[in-house]
Length: 188
Image 1: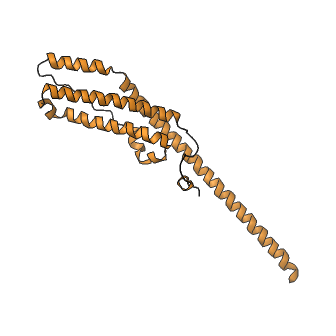
Image 2: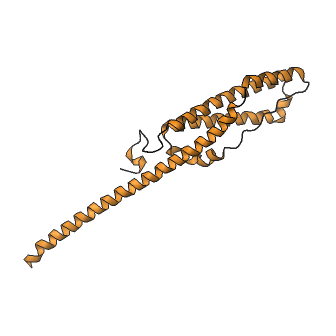
Image 3: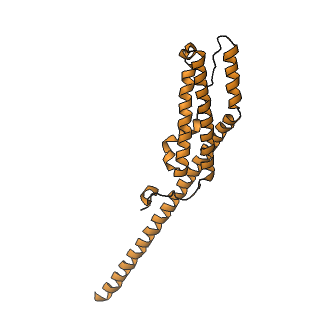
C-alpha cells in the first residue's frame, strides 16, 4: 500500500500542474482572440466613420461660402419676396448605426467625431427652423441673419469634419486604447 501512495501523489500533483498550465494557456488564448476581435471591430468602425465623414467633407468643401452669402444677399436686395431655401443634411446612416458602440473607439477619435456630429445636428436643427413656414414671415434682415448663422455653422461643421477625419487617420487601428485599466479591455 505504501509503495503506490508516493507515485499516486506525484501523479496527482503533476496532473494538477498540467491542468493549471492548460487552463492558463486557454485563458490567455481566449483573451488574445477577444482582443483581436475587438481590434477588428475598432478598425471596421474607424473605416466606416472615415468614409462617411469624407463623403460629407467632400460635399462641405465644394461650396464657396462667401460667394453663397453674397449671392443670397443680392437676391434679398433685388428680388421682391425672395426667401432663401436650404437643403436638409443627408441622413448619416453609418454614424447612426455605430453611435451605440462609439465608446470602443480610441479617445483621440471619440471627441472630434462627437463634436462633428453635434455640429451637424445643430445645423440640421437650424435648417428645420429655416424650412418652417414661420421663417418666411420674418423680415429680410432676420432671414439673412439666420442664413449667415447657417453659413458660419456650415464652416464650423466643415472644420470639425476635417478634424474628425484627421483624428481617424492618425488613430492607431490596432492595439489597446491608452489610458484604460485592464478590466475595460477584458483582462484583469
